[in-house]
Length: 257
Ligand code: 5BU
Image (cartoon, rainbow, N blue to C red; front, top):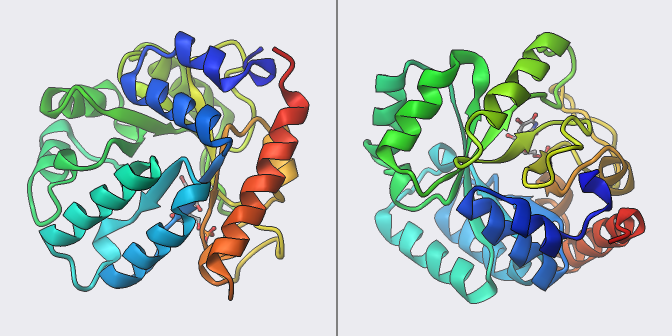
């Protein structure tokens, strides 16, 4: 059962390079925290990254919400990621035919393939979407979306099970799965990424549903994504440190080897 294994041990099971890296960063920095940098100005994201940097394993972006995107922003973000040893994830949620996904991944304004170490992908389009991404860049860690956090979403059990199966057939490219439940306990090399995490509230007014840090760790999360719980806080660094500690303490309780 992956839940009882240490991250150092799990790194040795990972077939994907980015997953290996992520496990090792998590073990070294003692953190399960990924911050969702959902801000629309480049300087705000850079400031956030500097402040939360010491406490996170991963920074998750939605690059297309920036109003002042410039390649220099990416350069600076990569420097901060290197200084504080965290990994960049672009939450693009690719979902289209292979050819279009290749263009969205490598071309356009954002050139995602040139800087994101991790990306999120919907399993909806099947194998061709993964083939097209790997053809563009085989040094990538994909997080496949098997479940989502929003209320009344249309994903059913079959979709979730088939997503896990698809992931397992692309072990060297898949870093893990985005989900809400411990779906793949027998595959310690995969990471469970769980969004919808907050200490102070249970939902927003647009369908987002939150669980507490303890609850998501109990539900199998290896990495918890926290956005507004931290970005809207008056003390960003203090709040990131608090989430890191609560998550890590909960995680230590489930690890026995
Ligand atoms: P929040 O501010 O903590 O609610 O932000 C959550 C982030 O996680 C946000 O960037 C979402 O796009 C992302 N997310 C999510 O909330 N739920 C999901 O099921 C998936 C992604 Br997949």
